[in-house]
Structures are given as C-alpha cells and as structure tokens.
Image (spheres, rainbow, N blue to C red):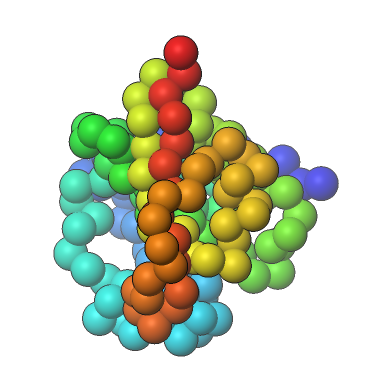
Length: 147
C-alpha cells in the first residue's frame, strides 16, 4: 500500500503549484470521472476551507479533501483520490488525517450514497434520506466528536 505525506493548508497559504494540483485532481475525479459540471465543482467556497492534501514520494497529489474546521460541525467535502489509486487504502488514510484533525469537534458531509458503507466503516453516521446533488445520489453523514 502506498503511504502519502499529508499536509493541511488554508487557501491563501497554498502555493500556485499546489492549487493547480488540487484543481487538476478534482477535475479528474469529479468533472471527468463523475461528469459533474465545472460550474458545480468550482463553487467559489475554497477560500473558506482548509485543504488536506496527500502527496506521494515524488510530490504528486494523490488524495485531497477540503474541510471547514472553523465551523461547527466542521464541513468535509470534495473527498478525492486519484482514479488509478482508488480502493488502495489512500481514502482511508485521508479520512484518518481529517478525523484526527477534527479531534473533539463534530463533522458533517454530503457523502456520495455508494460510499456510505465505507464512511460508516470509518465511524461516520448517516442521518436522513437520500438526496440528489450534482445529479449524484448523496446522504448526509456526521462524525461524532470524541468523548
């Protein structure tokens, strides 16, 4: 299994190269792979998030998510793993970093419905009914704070 080096940055602390890598990976996963329109993907909210990045040994971005640690609950979104590396454990590594950084804070996300069981295996809980977002079935999931 590949192990990544994870970094977390506020938007304005990202270098232009890092921001470019983030946008390329999100485009590959969401726009190309899942046919989400670029209008929905580039939503203007990135400035309000921390960007959790998983870099491989040569410095390529392989896993990514954005998290609003300053909100309660913290919002997790845009969870992405390079298509060639999905189902290799990198997503679990990424979510482990996020859950550690959440600490005693609660979290929430709109998770793609087909990933619900995987998120549940990581400790997330579904709340409510299935809904559509970007023409993809989603469920609302929460992360309980540590007691």
